[in-house]
Every structure is written in structure tokens, then in C-alpha cells.
Amino acid sequence: MNKPRYKRILLKLSGEALMGDAAYGIHPPTLTNIVGEIKAVADLGVEIGVVIGGGNIFRGMAGTASGMDRATADYVGMLATVMNAVMLSDAMRRAGLNARVQSALNIEQVVEPYIRGKAIRYLEAGRIVIFGAGTGNPFFTTDTAAALRGSEIGAEIVLKATKVDGIYTADPKKDPAATRYERISFNEAIAGSLAVMDATAFALCRDQKLPINVFSIFKPGALLRVVRGENEGTLVYC
Image (cartoon, rainbow, N blue to C red; front, side, top):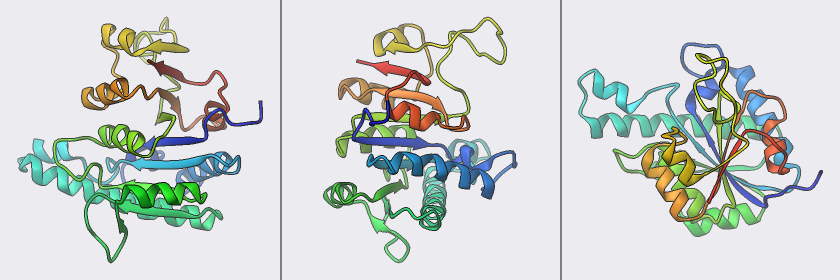
């Protein structure tokens, strides 16, 4: 199957994914590999939106634990996502991809503000749109931003890139008997208390009938196989 199953996707990429084996920050070879995976999908003509996290630089909850006000810590985390978005965009440029960064916080000297109509026009023109600064509001995660932006741009699916190749019946690192779900409904995931995304993001995807596929971004070719509709990761469906 060479043709893509989806025309427009929303890729949720965590900040930690950019770290590779490093303790923090961005590991350049890892960033290059991730961009290569995205390019393989873009070359199929798939329209790609990306929501990126900032946990490799700063986490709002970690800041709160150290005594920071939660809203302040979350704003710092949003700025970290913008830094990642700019670096991801530059890596895409070097790989021959045309990308635009839009931020939910106004930093117009650095990136464009998020404008839904403009983002959709970019996608239709074949440009990758990277959404930074989460939702622009404290107390909401980048998972929620992915669900929100995916719904706003009319994505057909949210692809959540993780370090694990899907959703398992138990933690595969702790339970060798754990098995991967190929498909699971939203209701089954809720009943099984499976941590697919945070509750707000999960509920929004369910209500908007926006499926989620959880897969490993570190498994070569996995993103491409998901987009082609092959059995990769775990599909959470309505």
C-alpha cells in the first residue's frame, strides 16, 4: 500500500523525543532522524500539522514542584515549545521541507501568531505547519493543544509519537506478558483507565470523533506505515 490513507494529519511530538539519549535539550542526530521520518510522509503529499512539546527544556509541572506559580511555570513551558518549534522548522528547511511556525503567544519578531485560516491555507499549499506555545493558556497540556489544533484544521487523525510502539495491556517494561492493542475504542480505553492522553485532550478527540494513533517515533518507518494505514502502533477509534 503506497498511497496514504490520510490526507491531513496532526502529529503530536513531545519535547522529550528530541533529546535522544541526552539528559536535556536537543540531540541533533535525533532531530535529523525525526525530520527524515516526517519528510517521508510529506513526500506522499500528506498535509502535516505538528504540535510540539517543551519537556526537553522546561516542564510547567516541574516548575510548580520547585515552588513556581503554576500559571507562570506553564507560560515558561509554552516558551520552551516555541524554541523547539523554531529549531524543528530550521531542521526541516535544511532537509528541503517548507515549514511555518505559528505560536499561540504573540512573538511576532520570531514566529507568526496562530491564525486558523492562514494555517489551513499553508497546509493546502503543501507547507508543514508547526504549532508552538500549546493552546496559549496555562493549565492545558500540549496533548490538549494537539486535540484542539487537530480539530480546528480538520485533521483526519491525531498521531501521538511516543517512545513506546503503542498502547499495552500493562507497562511492557514491567510486565513481559503485556500485549499491544492493535485497535481500541475510546470507551474501552476509558473503561480500562489507559493513559492515552490527558483527560481533556482525550475527551475532545472523542467528542470530535477524531481518532488517535499512538506509535513510536523511534521505530524506523513507523510514521509512514501509520499514514499508509498499516498495522502500526495502536489506533484509538470512535
